[in-house]
Image (cartoon, rainbow over all chains, first blue to last red):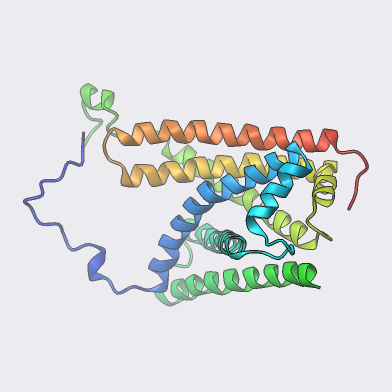
Length: 140
Length: 130
């Protein structure tokens, strides 16, 4: 097939020559969060729905995987819950930024960097708000 | 580069001439994903509790079950395209065709499982709570 590389020849200077910035981080994190949600997130979402469709016992098995016997989240619950909700909000913020980039806007260096940082601010704030609301309810 | 040779086209080289349409559909699904996932996160955050009866009763409402089904359609369409782009970027040999076919099966399976489950919950839950 195509793209068979002759390993005897050197590679051109690639990503290694660039200093990491928010624009690069937001780009690869968009891909990582999207791929993560599409695999892990889809699996859990479908398990949640199928468990509900099977009934209370199957739903209890689902809940028990992510909670302690007192009903509070266990470590896996926090890891998966916070991880997936942060992924969603980060991918969402970054996706909205892409709408502007697709229209040819926001390519000025400083504005582009600011919007990249804004996606992180949004996702951290939204994730924190979401979990404060959820945990206030669970823990009284 | 031109349009390549006929042998090259048999080997799957060159443009499929479907990229712009796929890109546009991906963007359209981003818009509906944005609305539907925001709705889901806000609704889940506002639920009074997360026990079986509350969740099943919530999903059983028509104005919850239908947006949830729309979300499944929108999100599966979106990740089907998104993951294909990732596969095409990193897999350069025959494995890309295998992975894209597996992705197609995965997408259809989870889409049908999710929608069937939502409908079953909606049609078998009696006494709407929440």
